[in-house]
Image (cartoon, rainbow, N blue to C red; front, side):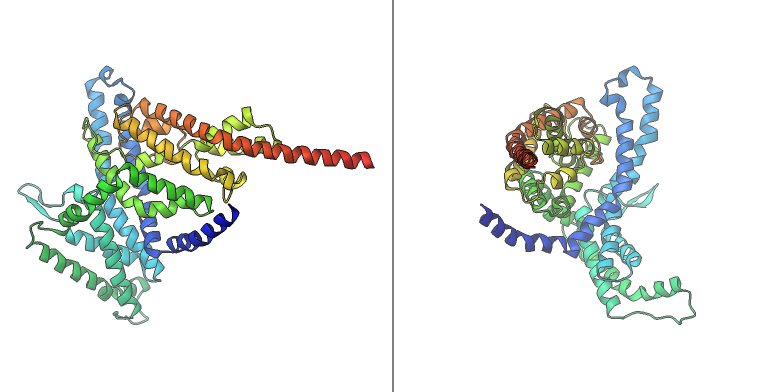
Length: 437
């Protein structure tokens, strides 16, 4: 077993390092985080707007108050969740330019402008020209990611080659830097304007609809399936077991898909749709995959099953952080990392909770996740309630925690017994030493 683990670690180590050092995946991950504050605020607002419906007392409120909730909180989503592609495109360009050592703020702006260049423009007699809000969110997500990477690559390559307009030293730095960015910025803008024009002669009419139909929809269809999610969960846990931040690695790959699925659910929920389109999205991954796993183990072993001092002390240390889903004290405290005894429950428990949650939602026992951003530190029960807009989601989280804890018990009990033997042996040795004296 030890030889197998050593060989496996040698093979997986370079792969995880390669993924962890990939500037495109890192930029993608960090670019998504740029949208987090705004999308978090938008999620909170839509939750507040729907609190009467969630708790079942909307019918008891006066009509004017329900109208106020809709008018006051409703538009917030249009400026946050519904236009998240704008934040992400700018963020990817900004972060990727940093990896190339070029001006980040100009790269972000050029990426955003290049993305807007490809968006179809509608016209209305009263409104004039407009861009459909769906293209700024879920539908434009993938084309935005592609554009941000290409535009930034071009911008950085030209800038690094010093094909720029240089101003005299007497010119203020910000003005000089703006002139330096003109030629590197003009190249990607010209390219995407040409691409925009070419697409006007195709059956799609624009690049956004083309990418959405040919690439994004198939990927979302694949990524939104249970097998795909189980694969993602498996590798997340496996990387963590090797001491690598599996969440960051895997999420940098799947976030575009999960984010787009979440926005579609969010828009449908905000519009009052009776049936949300997707079971799996960012909300599902954050709420039902392995939330509460450490908490369940900590409660059972800190206060009931642990016999060894080491296990009891460790789990009591884990308990408080686990309430807020902080897993590092248990991951490195037991430890879980590179511990062959705990590899099976570490991977199996989240896979089982994911499967249970999926089918509970699929058969209609629990509403589909609403696509809102639920902060990962939100305690269980509350997270499930907020993520689905229903107490059924909270109950499902409790069920998941119970099942995952049951999976963990025999493995942790085995470790506890070993700890107890070690402590008894140490105590006997100490007693024998005292007797000799």
